[in-house]
Length: 330
Image (tube, rainbow, N blue to C red; front, side):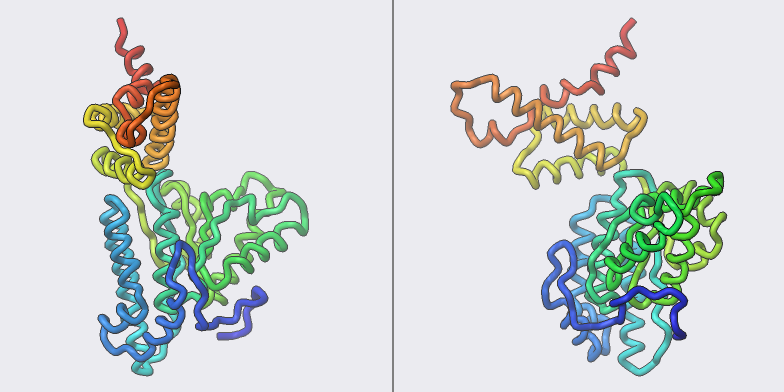
């Protein structure tokens, strides 16, 4: 590879192994090194421990069947590429830049974190960390401000994954004095010339991302993998709610579970619904109502069951039910 037109200091690839995000094992880097001696798929997965992350994605993420399938496909590509390297079949590293499209709350950032772990364990990035940014982190407000901002973000992301949310806001052709194009040009050079040390994931609404790629064919040509995240079904959202409650040592009473099913059916049809994000917000408000309900009984000695149970009243007090009642009133 020739000398990059634009390079980030401190980005020389290394396989010494650095602890990755989300509690990845500290020896993942050495496992990736051991995978150089593997000659079967099972050996690569076992020695790199990448299979653990794939299994966690299957177990921990509700729904998202097409996304899980694409992750397995990408992991398969990397494993086979590793086997080819071990046999001396040299080739350029595969392009791993990605586009994640879908509505808010569909798991794009969560999957990006897990993808960073997989890439690190298989030795395709040095650190396995994820740096999540938006336009404001990359684009300056005056001449000479954008390049240093973009360079600093890229420096932090080197050796890992750079996740740019709502990436289409980088391009604002209606504003002649906008500096987003300068950030795009720097990103393009680094994505091409240092792709063996950085994976870029562009995320946002599908229609807006498609328009962004049409307006920036250079960026589109550097994206090898397009993953479209579907909205969750009501059944998936209920499962997510129960998992979120369980993580905080709460649970639905039987009547509360039925009430939350009704809540979801109403909320999904309302504006600004954000899938799992809206579910989390709804549960936070239900916990607040439960706390207020219990707080009012100052002298009572509560049991663990009472302190961990969300009642139907805690759900039905939502404005979603009140709005629905108002809409049907004569």
